[in-house]
Image 1 (tube, rainbow, N blue to C red):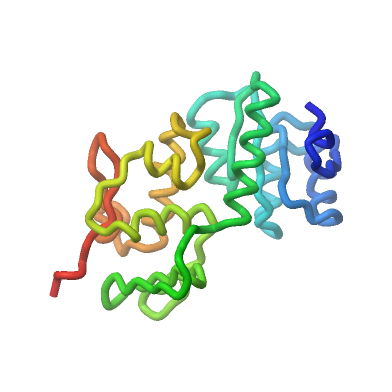
Image 2 (tube, rainbow, N blue to C red):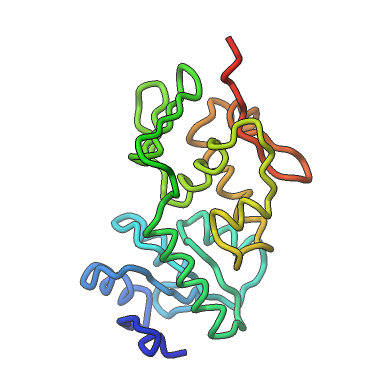
Length: 215
């Protein structure tokens, strides 16, 4: 499809190295990258890209295996689309990724949640502090944490989290939730395998622990 007809300014690259050079030169709002590229494949290019840029990335590939999808997301992709796909699907995913990048959360102003003596979430400034240290979260990670922590003690289904954090286009992509829950646990929990804050409700979804009444 011609994205320029949709109002986007587009710059092209023919291989992975050229894509990295274009990102450095053009500073784009979003990168759409094919995994199968000469000289440097999309996975390698994404790994190199994340060393100097946090620009949103959508990966395109003929590999539809969930392990490949998870690998791409773990490297820092914001979305992963398997071929073949319709032009409408690509456009909707691009718009969804840009929306998430532009609006990290829907939090009300000047709101801070003191979870316990160790963890504080400032929804206004999009900051998370644990043991006096700032925890660096990517926009999607913060959006997911916002929807969980804003509803302590409430079970959030996979479908609800996908719709609120990623958009209705992702209602069947439950692996996105699992992966980003793991990211949050790695950053917030002392023991991610035995979490204190983000709890699993098996077969249903996740729940942010309500610690307000604990000593």
